[in-house]
Each structure stands twice: as C-alpha cells, then as structure tokens.
Length: 126
Image: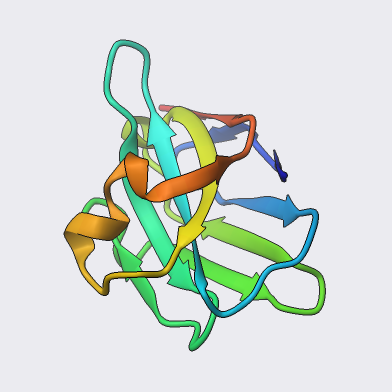
C-alpha cells in the first residue's frame, strides 16, 4: 500500500515536497516513481528512483527543478519540487513496481507499476 501526501496550493516559483509512505516490505527489486495527471490528459511520468542503488531519472519537463529521493529506513519516497510553474499543476501519484528493465520506456509506462498511491493535488498559481 502507498500513501501520498504533501500536495497543496503554491505560487509560481515556490516549492513543495511530496511524500509517499509504503506499508509492507520493500526491497532492491523495486523501483518507485512519481507520475502526474491533468484533467483530460494521460498520466505522465515525472521521476523514478531504483530502490537500490538509488539512481534517479527525470522527465525533461522537471529536470533540474524536481528531486526524487528515498529513505530506506522509513520506507518513504519523496519528491521535492522547486521553481514550480503553473504547468506543474496536476494530481501527483506515487507508484511502485518491479525493477526489471533499465529503460526509460519501461519506467515511464504506467503498466510497469503494481502499486499506486491515492494521488495528491498540486496547484500552482500564476
């Protein structure tokens, strides 16, 4: 089970930190990711982190502004978002799945992930 939190309303240029808590055991065979979805659009890959070795990958639209991290002891995956833009407004979802293929196509595919959080709304005002 995944539980996402931390969404809210922020002005453009501001920052937010999302957190995703995983219940149950996690191990090195898993990858965690954040996706986002705007009304009427498909769910979009934002970032992923391999549980071990902790390497990260980002969508071009957030590279340099967002940072994904994980805490092994707490079983959490965070997404730190800086320099937020109105185009970042969306419902953000955390997800976890088997770390099987080291490929951006694999990580950005929603069907890769078996577990999803409930979503948390981020609204960036201009």
